Image 1 (cartoon, rainbow, N blue to C red):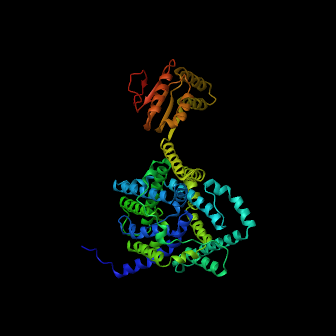
Image 2: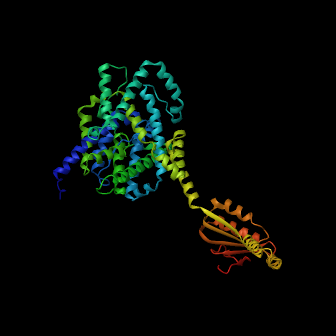
Image 3: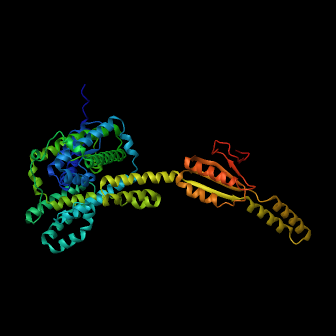
Length: 537
């Protein structure tokens, strides 16, 4: 039975939205491919697969898939190390892993990754992307390493200062960025045409008209650029390849599913099935790997443009893939007119959107630990590599969570201090009457003869090994010649290390002459060690 036909109003809305998404995706697909060190056509192939294949599959109905700026740095590193053939195998295996994870219904668990790690990952990628594209803006070859992109910036400034072609190239790129920024400030109807497309077309027109000495994109042709392969499976014996596959799988899956959650908040349509969406993303990546194209993720820029343009169903994202295919087949020569600094400007603009500029101040005020994890993840990516940086972020997130959940409070109240306060009050009340003063002195002597009351210690929260220094420092500072009432009734959890340490301290304190420890539940030991138990135990 065929699915019911869409109402004309819905189809018209989807058709209009598909054109908008196509116009947004076109410069991004080409720019991301060039920045990744692969032919521009491969970015279009990934966009086409994202529309025509993933667009048809269940999972999400509105979000759009294609090459993502968040994977640019990782792809460039993979191409530099393993070549295009190695990239195809990496993307293929990562896609198959995504399909397997989705079929095992593990898609929802990717949402358990803390947002600060994902934001830190994207911030690190954004900074590397911006730093690398600054060289392209000036028509200068960029260093291969992440730290090198930053340490080489003073040399780049010197190159621009002494080279006329570098200044012309930088002027074209700077003007492209200015057009995009100004376009974003225009009224909504004018912004129906994406600012990136307007800026790139304007840069291409000016460069061609004035015959500026600026590098443009080299086009091989769609079929010539692709290198279809069933995979070079021998490369899987390389641990570096396996680490890259794991990184691709983690980042592509997390970015896609976080994008899906964000897009769901933008519309009132069907919600995303995260397991099916992971299968769809994996299928798309497996096909891209077979074709030798770039990896894909669901991308928030194209997806939000789809929602804002009025998309109702998945037809809009399928049609956007069709428009990309028609453009790649009918007008590939137009790509050759695009100046490289204009594409670099598009990616610099996209890279700034990966930085949590607005979210970071609020995060620092309200959740300082999350802000530290975010910054540390980004810094680790900048100084090492993507895989190590993500592992550092996840490790710090686990440590932060363990520290916060092991919060414990130790409160000490000294009964003798309260008794002294009562005695002082009695003396003051006695006034100047000699008899009353003597009576007060008798009472004071009686209290002293009775000895000071117990020191009351209450420990509440979660007692884990992380908090042992706090607990033992407080207990060891207690006077050794005083009885202690140790109230553990407020503890929600006691791990083995704390249990052992508390038992040892109780045994040591009970060994002092004439004193004991009165313990209030929970019971810390199952043996018959001699200790005095409070009546409330």
